[in-house]
Length: 138
Length: 138
DNA sequence: ATTCTTGCAAATGATTTGCATGTAA
DNA sequence: TTACATGCAAATCATTTGCAAGAAT
Image (cartoon, rainbow over all chains, first blue to last red; front, side):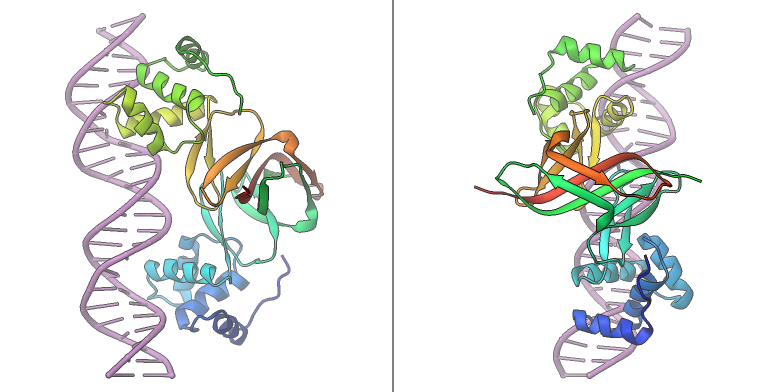
């Protein structure tokens, strides 16, 4: 989506505000997810961050991703059919389209799907995840 | 749901019709999923089938589950938030409610959710997965 | 000095695979 | 016999953890 990119200062501010010390590793990971990626897997995050920060360990990638998720800076998405795990810098409410050809994930904003629930009284709804599967024409 | 149970003869017929030899292990696994379970994990399938068939190996459980899925007799569901994998004998189109307290999965039939898609032309929709997360009151 | 973070390697958990054995037509 | 199915153990893959060493305040 047309989410505005954050420069390094803003990345550091976001981390601090979320309660995470802005270490070099965290900055690199968050900046990559926020600015330069599209639903990357942990391996893809590692590959990208390695270019800038060649000594980062995969364990630190995982720990950092978990920290970013725990502090609300990114979302984790487990794709139902493939089981793949990816990260999403779009933290506003949205849905996902899965392009079956590419395996690519595309954000769908809230307005693009209208959902009407007809559930019995005792279902207390807190969240709705929608994955639309299909192909992109043309 | 009120899906009708299948006796062993019907289980065997379903397996044969799907192109799978109705071996004792396959009968036990499919019968358990179809008649006596509610979205079991592979481990739960193993525990249940072990009672009837104490020598079955976990590898055979997995192979059998994969075969049942490949032949359309059961569906595999990867739950987006927990990442848990469960199997579902309900092969008609439906959605899922995830009870956050229990981690329990509940089938929602097609009528219980109305979805209206507003996607651009070039999205060729083939399937929609919906996971409603929440709690059960009372 | 103390606290937090990192890197490495080992541990874990889920699932798959290779292969030798068993079973049924 | 021939094909297929099973059981076991080893292999694989993703992720987490323990711990010692490093960086920052």
